[in-house]
Image 1 (cartoon, rainbow, N blue to C red):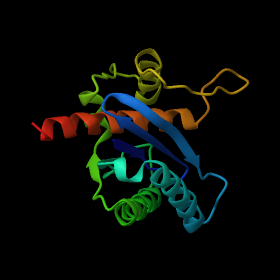
Image 2: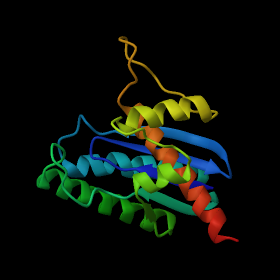
Image 3: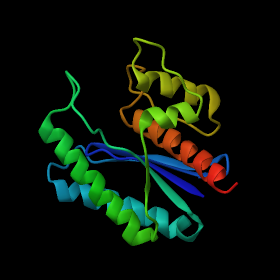
Amino acid sequence: MICGLDISTSITGYAIFDDDNLILNGAWDTRKYKDFFQKVEVVRDGLERIYDQYGDQIKAVYIEQSLQSFRSGFSSAKTLSTLSRFNGVVSWLVYSKYGITPEYIAATSARKLCGITIPKGEKAKPVVLKYLLDNQPGFVIDYTRNGTPKPESYDKADSIVIAKAGVMCEQKNSK
């Protein structure tokens, strides 16, 4: 089994694949916690629940690589720093609980491995969500009363892409 994580200080998505079968998919919402370490505890508790259920079956953990540079109109230095710290702490939790050194993969590389192309000028998240709703059995999302996808839907989707890319990487490495 391969676990994929889309780590964020607001919502962290997770997915587990057994070969090409989606076994588990969800998200831990930490938006209501202002304290960094409370957010870490929520994710830690979630990782422990997954370990209790699938621990010795998980052979690799893939994590979406955190942003490495500034882009106009996006995250500030403080946000990038906090995200990198959070990513590092969660990576350590994976290593210490699962005994697995996580592998990191960029979102663009993961999407490419999964055959998802983002048309020029379009935002990636809605394209990924639609692709998975159309092509990934077992991927289910909830909608707001206005009919829009709930925020965690995008993190769940991104974790699937990371996990599927991880499956492909593992298959390639075993040949």
